[in-house]
Each structure stands twice: as structure tokens, then as C-alpha cells.
Image (tube, rainbow, N blue to C red; front, top):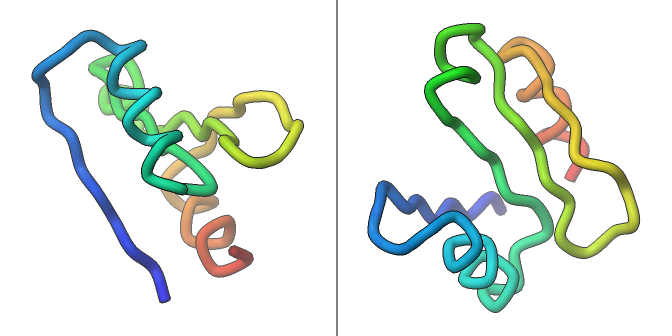
Length: 67
């Protein structure tokens, strides 16, 4: 099961990441203006010791299928 919680504004970025962490989410998908313009998404791992990474839209489905 894939559950999605979106947040479109309200509070600064740090507060948004804290909210995502408290929600129990495994990853946070970050879509800022730069990512949208480049058809990419940044992936921040909240439960694993992995570096934040940026993926093209086509690779995102592979990542989500692997969760």
C-alpha cells in the first residue's frame, strides 16, 4: 500500500520535513521549482542512512515499486 501525504505551503521547509518525519513516512519526495523544470524529484530518506538523491520522473516509479 502506498500512502501519500502532500503539503503545498504553510510553514518553512524545516517544519515540513519534521512533519514528514513525525508521520512515520519512509521517504519524502521534494518537488520544488527547479525539480519541476527539470522533470525530476528529490528523494529524502527519513528512516535509512542514505543520502538525498534526485531522480528523473521515469525512475521514480521504480523507486516506489521497490518500497
